[in-house]
Length: 342
Image (cartoon, rainbow, N blue to C red; front, top):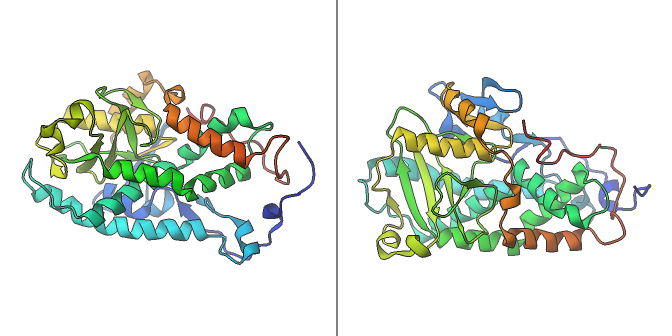
């Protein structure tokens, strides 16, 4: 590794108070709390269940911090502030949608406005990209283009670069917005679970083939539970899902009555998608624990070719040939996604 700190990013002096920054927003996590406003969490790595508050999970100190921004007269916490604006807009929309889905008859339109659809699409796209798991996935895709083990600060800078790149998140948001949206209502006694990586992806027509991906791929659909009772499904308008009957149902409460088995299936997707923590309003994780024993944990080789190519191109520009642009960090190498899993 090259010695000495040659990168001004690493030499910036930032006067600030460290803060816990959520990669899964607090407003979202509150939708999965019990009647005492607690979240029940299964830690897959240590196989333990505990309860906590939304402010204490799905967060890390200075997760999006960029000290070098101070040197050009900007706020080192700028990414956090920008994401907070997206969250505030999404929080209002989700607060309106949850009771609306409950009272809307199956098969009927919810009356989502174009502005709400665009705002929620942006939120879902960024949520796919902003988690710890997404950070590790981005890092793993750069491996063929770098000469050193990726360190935590390098990975944070690369991750932030991806999050700020409109050529990444805007096409994702546009694809989500252009999908057929169905809202499922869970009337069973089993709540929907979420996780520290809550947007799930499946291969089209394969309801149990969960994959680690982004909505950038053209052959996947996605789901995001919005609360213990409501889930959003986004289906691309192609193949079977492009039929008139399917596209005409866009923006409706699903006509399908969700069974407990269907809820279990969605919760299984959260187990697969999670980087470490699965979250719900109930302390009973028995089904998810059993499912994890036979679930394939590592589907990184199924990441879409489009996404691999895009991140690889960004990595070539971010890490120029001949070595790292900075090497002043004292941290040890990060764990790879494979190593970080139980």
